[in-house]
Length: 393
Image 1 (tube, rainbow, N blue to C red):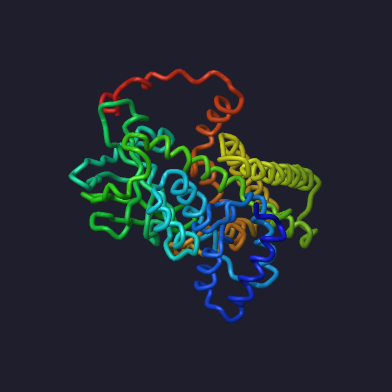
Image 2: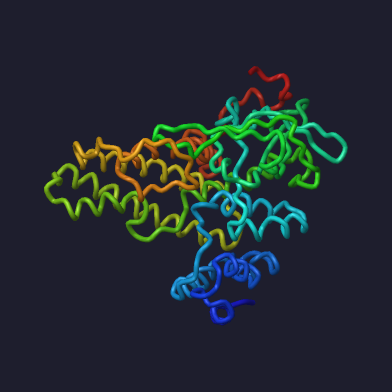
């Protein structure tokens, strides 16, 4: 079993063989993956060593101290947090070897083709069709709210392959090449002025059956792995104390005493404490991941993330008064990642409005927490045993 000292030894050997100061960034990341130090809990040969997940921090600390480059996780968050664990859980050996290394190094960006104009909160009602033709599937439909689609090489895609069964049972999971003919990516400009989201139109896109993840008709089961990991990735990210949204407002509070009032002080203290509780809870959740896959608890973390971001950004705008009404740049651009702390208070306020929608709406997550965490009775369902083709739309 790999222990702390063994990991330190392996990391130092990597640094000696590939000094960060003189090694090309991509070459270093590839060497790190091949040494099993990318994600140590993954199997050998796939960027890991089969070690406990908790030991990743040992590797990261050694590399950070040596000034080694990282893989820009914000830019490739969908690949790292959603695609990779799904491929690991359901992919063939060939798929794992093909996709995981360039995914982790950032050579290939991933996006997520799940939500549709008529299937957002009720994702299982999706209507994008995939029809089998020989060794291929021909896909037609529309996806929406697709982050990073404009820079992605690959997408994780769920499509309906059997309309004659209830909605959850007729879905299949695929890997879609975003450069294939018939894939049309169009920007969706947001309230921030940017277009980090996209809508994606799929017209007679041919996907080889070799790019299917999981069995035909079992895509909803596979998608649950993606969705559970997505909520942990969003709500359970590792942050230092005063990391995230609480950092900028705390800095402003300390540096701008003329803005302070007793009421604002009390509200900031409350949100600071709640943020710290959420951060520590996220740490506990990550420790639980050491012994298994994420469960419905991630829904609670994502709920807290959305609520706190919106309340903190609202308080920050209020604290700044007239300054909070200013906005730095409305230029239409298509960023590769979201930068909450690198922009001004106005951006944070507007962008946080999407936190209660993306990654599962807060209303849907409340149901998940109620039913799957607290064990409360499920809401009445009238569509559970009805074929998808017979549902009212």
